Amino acid sequence: MDDRPWLAQYPEEIPATLAYEEQPVQAYLTKAARDYPAKTAIHFMGKELTFQEVYESSLKVGCYLKKLGVEKGDRVGIMLPNGPQAVISYFGILYAGGVVVQTNPLYTESEIEYQLKDSSCKVMITLDILYPRVQQVMDRTDLKHIIVTAVKDYLPFPKNILYPFIQAKQTGLKVQVEERGTNHEFKRIIASERAEELDIPFDFDEDIALLQYTGGTTGLPKGVMLTHKNLIANTSMCASWLYKCKKGEEVMLGLIPFFHVYGMTTVMILSIMQAYKMVLLPKFDVKMTLKTVHKQRPTLFPGAPTIYIALLNDPDLHKYDLSSIRACLSGSAPLPIEVQKKFEKATGGKLVEGYGLSETSPVTHSNFLWDREQVKGSIGVPWPDTEAAILSMGTGEILPPGEIGEIIIKGPQVMKGYWNRPEETEMTFKDGWLLTGDIGYMDDKGYFFIIDRKKDMIISGGYNIYPREVEEVLYEHEAVQEAVVVGVPHPYWGETVKAYIVLREGYSTTEEELNQFVRTYLAAYKVPRIYEFREELPKTAVGKILRRVLIDEERAKQEKTK
Image 1 (cartoon, rainbow, N blue to C red):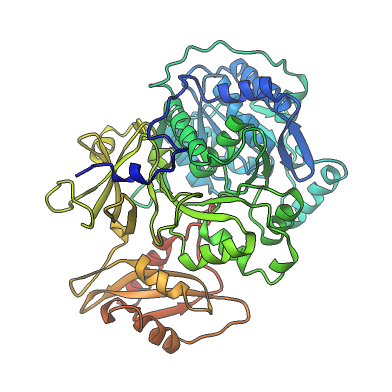
Image 2 (cartoon, rainbow, N blue to C red):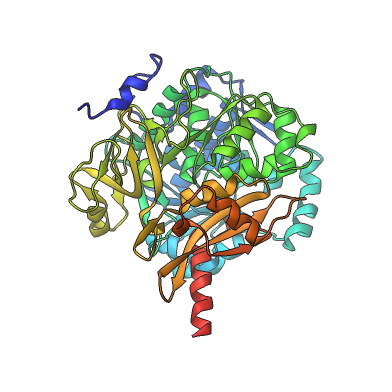
């Protein structure tokens, strides 16, 4: 049996293996500035920056970090929404030889404190309105300096004058940070620092570029060590997959947050590598996104299912021209088939599901965008140089096509390990394979299918129930906008199935109607026994539904009734 049957599915334009330039990630920006100096690199709410401007600003940040005492391998945090500062800071840290630590702007003080302590960050680059949270925990961490910027710093006139008033009204915060002591002003650094190339020794295989903290669904968040090689490899794979896209010509919609590895690799690094124009949005807003697509004409739109769902359900969708969109790679959560069909119809472009983890930089699999039929329900095939297999959860042996087990991965995009956690790193690997924790199977053509997360599987009365299967059916009901299924404690069955439903605007249904609908598609033991209708579901910043939050809510309810 061929252990890589997926290679036979590859169109001739995608090679099975790639040659990787042994260079640091920031070399992409250096090259883009040399080859396309005057080309627009970033469009941000009306403000545009060329590749030369981004390059010079990144060097200035790098030089200033060196003055602050940042040495090779030191960790520097970025706590910013998508905007020019996020890109400039990222590459500035790498130019200084530092390691980027991405921090979610939504984090609470305790979450910030934990991450700063765990990573031993020396410097944090953040927004003025986020500054109080960082400053509050500074004395309890290794943090020595805070570099502060504001959204208005990169807005055109008159938006730069008006925005602080809008921000104060929306957030109730008006923060004025003075440049003194440990506080440093980003805007002043860009205005006065000299842009000089820094000569930092470099090891392609070993040097860490990024500490990407996982969501912490199983205990405290862990810092995933991603090397320059990991990120160069995964970005190169992504470019090979987009073989119909032309260097220097595409327009990328930068909506997925860069503090998530998916946005960082498939939007930011790829755009710099390929000299694409990035159209950045600081947060997801349905109307703002539709207007931006209509006006800026992006050709590439990486996103998440909840983003596509929200756009499709906007009552004014028909007023906007989305026809510029050629290719969308959906990640972070399973893509319902109905959502894929509707979005492709609305745009005329291709929307396919991909798969990956923080531990793999992140992408390992994807469906083909062009020249191949879509395989419904599949996460696609492994990317070039990526090996994948199905491991028996009973015997620990590699399983043949069609058999269900745990998906395991090998490839140059697989992490170096977890930061300061050698035992957990060892537990995550088996004979050189990364254990993903996802349950699935491979068909005889090499297409992979995910049934569910190992930890999300519901066991009811001895039956294994996979939430994704139930969710796919619920999404086919015309009244359902969003659905998530969890297992909740049951005194007799151990667990039973509960569905949380968000209805489409203008639609209604009942628990009884949904129950009848699901029963026509699924065996009786898989049908939800409890339904809860909600206005919205808890989500991460990239739109991934937080199933664990719902489970914890259920457990808390059960405790109260005991």
